[in-house]
Amino acid sequence: MSNVGPYRGLGIAPVRNGGAVVSDRGVVWFKVTLTPNLHVGHTFQFAYDGRLLPMTESALDFSLASVTRGTHTIQAHVVDADGNTLISSRQVEFDVRERR
Image (cartoon, rainbow, N blue to C red; front, side, top):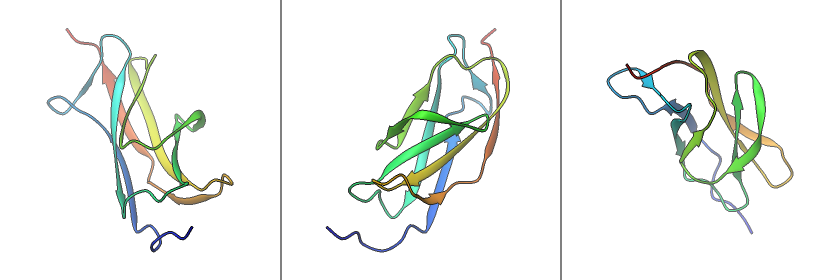
């Protein structure tokens, strides 16, 4: 099975409400953008605060639980079936605040 063309762009950002990431249950949602679309057999892998998470996703929206208040980083990678990184986003810094 062949894939069509290489990836040209990958981005990730937390879903913000009024400019801040507000979470009173420790859950933060993220949105991934990828050009072109994810190829068959490839998945997203994420690094949270510099550590690879033990999960892969194929959806463009995903959430993390147990995110504490403060400053954090997130980065997305596209990996193939063999675990090879094909493209990486830049590392994005975000601040989490509790709802008042």
